[in-house]
Length: 157
Image 1 (cartoon, rainbow, N blue to C red):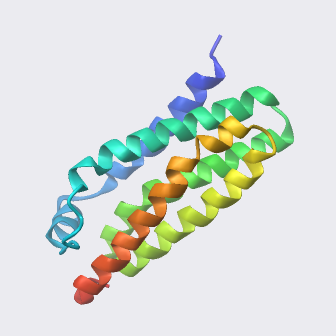
Image 2 (image 1 turned 90 degrees about the horizontal axis):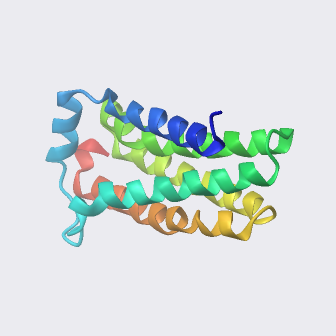
Image 3 (image 1 turned 60 degrees about the vertical axis):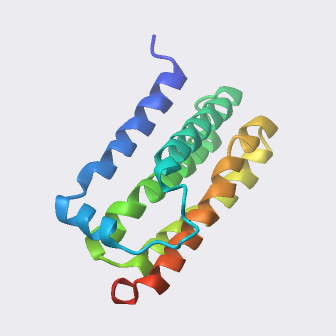
């Protein structure tokens, strides 16, 4: 029998693979952008997001196991999915549109969705809500960084 954690993890991985829709010219555009001088940890960002996604999937698993298959739980799973899609869409959408402003909007949207999800999940499980805190902490940093990059790269804002 397929376990719920396998389905949740599988969906998370499938959505994450969508980030690979970037073309070499998209990557070239993104890589040539000026970054703020204080952004010294850029190499760690993929690891940070991997941890955040694992925490999010674990949070979803806890919520699912509390009330599996109910309409409310399915709606909450939809919120988790929306959050991951918005998060994964950040780089490809921003790069395709060549717009740091769009990236800032997508990043801010992820933060709003994560706040809503955390508040909903808090009523179900404190642990599940706690596992969303890394997203809540990191998302504003990424969004602020993109906003700063728009100021450093006005031609790409």
